[in-house]
Length: 102
Image 1 (cartoon, one colour):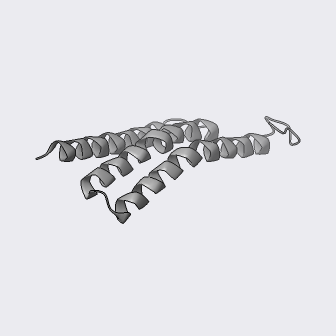
Image 2 (cartoon, helix red, strand yellow):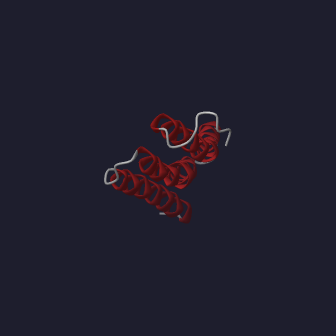
């Protein structure tokens, strides 16, 4: 068992644990904006950790590059998409005006 393998397993394990914990926590809240709030740690930390663990275990190759690319894209776009989804949900509920640009 090498240090790289231990690092890969640790990254993968922490990432999966974070995803599972945020999924379970999101089941306890009722409002959609609160549920989407629990999605942000998954997309900004959990998924990239899982991708990093997979890439470390696989070694550097084209497959690892694709895994890292997906992890980076999810990390960048996840919070943005969650914010946009909350805005749509709040507009539909009438809690923010329809013409609000922010």
